[in-house]
Image (cartoon, rainbow, N blue to C red):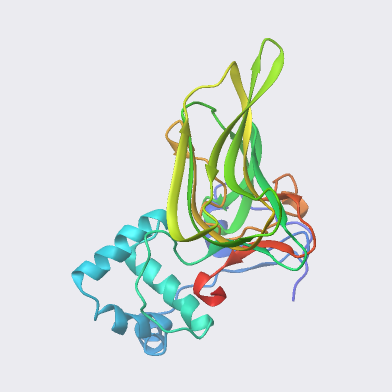
Length: 296
C-alpha cells in the first residue's frame, strides 16, 4: 500500500476528487481509498434474491393499504417513509429473534430511551443542556461518510413546548417519590438569574402514553434552559421516545428519537456535549437506548 504525507489537488478538480476518493479517520489511521461504487444491475439482481429487502418485500406486499398508512403516520416521528420504518423495525426483530410484522405504534418507533433503577439505586437524574450557543455534529455535504462540527445559535423564544411518549413500571422505594420530565428555563431580570420550571409528572405505572406542556412567559429575558429526567425514591423501568423541545417553530431536542442516549463525542468532536449528562447516577441506575420488545 502506498504511503503519502500530503495530497495536492489541482484547482478545479476538487469535486472530481471528492466523487472518486473517500478519506477515513485521520486521527487513528489516515486512509484515502476509492469509493465503494454501486454494483451493476446484474449484480444487484443477483444479490437482491438473498437480501433482507427482498425478504421483507414479500411481507410488505401482504399489508393492506390501511396498514401501510399506519406505518406512514408513525414514520413522521422518525422522518422515515413507511417502508423505511417497516424495514428498521423488522430488522431489529430479526436481530433479537422476535416475531416479525407485529404492527407499528404511534408512540414509539424502533429504538427508545430506557432508564432502569435496580439493586440499591432509587434515584437517577440526567439532563440535556441548551445554552444560546453550542456545538453539534452533522453529515458533511457531499461526503456523507464524514461528520463535521457545526456551531448552533439557538434563537430562544417563547412559548416553549416540551413533550414525549413514555411507558413506566415503577414501584415506590422511599418516602418522597417523584418521577418527572421538565425544562428549567433561565432568564435574567434586573441583574438576577431567574429559574422557571415547566414540569411533566410521569405516571409511575402506565402503558405508552403521550404527555406535553407549554411555557408561555418568564420574568426577564431568556438566557438558556436544560431539559431533565429526574426519578427519585422509585425502582423499576421507564421507556421514552419522541422527544419534543420546541420553540420558534423548531424541535431543538438533541437525539429526539433516543437512538443513542449514551453517545460520547471524542477527539476532534470533543467540543460537542453528550446528548444526556448524568447528574445523579448511583450504582444500579442506568440509562441507554434499547429496542423495547427485547427488554419486556
